[in-house]
Length: 210
Image (cartoon, rainbow, N blue to C red; front, side, top):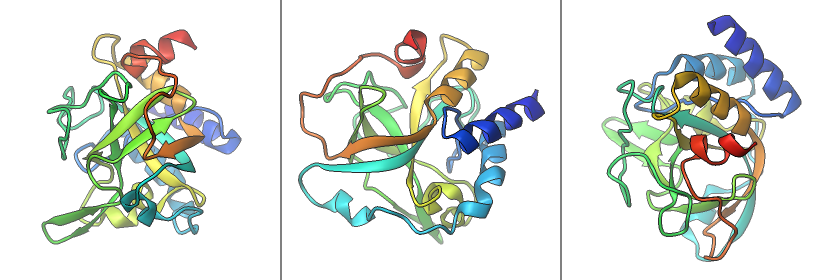
């Protein structure tokens, strides 16, 4: 089962179609580990965006590499625990401006301190998903997450990891959903209110309607 998933992920990345992973500081999923291995040769590629934009006011359109993580491949496995709660105490959200979906970003770890690539509470709007998202979690494992793809990015693109949920639909459908949404996509940093929204958990709204 694992080998077939890795083959699917490799093909999806090669064609910039949709696949997924979760590579978080508190996530150690089998898919995440395999995707990390696949992407390691490209992690030194320079970015096409600047993280300093997360500290300024106003909207900015960005092209990012988006992946997903689920209830099933979080750590502890079968949980919605998050590292930097802002609006939610556990991963969730419906994708509206007032209830954005939890998003994980890369970070740099120095001793016991982690500096996030985007501050907790930073909002994004993901156009292809019709969802608002908010940074509430960390993406990247181990003592040196800055050496992994979540922080280093993918082929020059910033890496964002969005929570798809999935508890109610099961692990297989959650995995399929994560594969489906992964790819290079346009997002809006610091979005205003009023963008079109398809409300609901990603696994039961976006993925259920595509």
